[in-house]
Length: 87
Image (cartoon, rainbow, N blue to C red):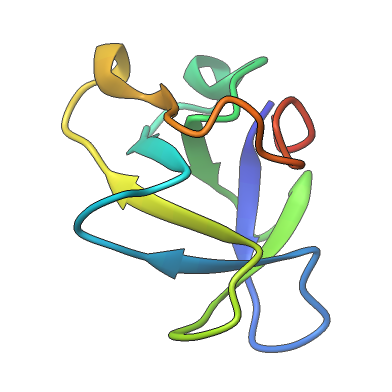
């Protein structure tokens, strides 16, 4: 499950939001159950996150681009070291 908390320090993953050439297309859902078993569908939860992310402008571990539907979510870079380690 990709349950995410945004932090300013001590992040598990440093994330950069890009408008082209992402590693991962991300859809943000409003229900936790939709994010189950998916790296590309994120649910933001401050209480019980699976991963803590810090949004950065440089030196990111992961580049993401937000999408408007679950169907579009998923890995573009299928050999990325974080594949199957977020959700």
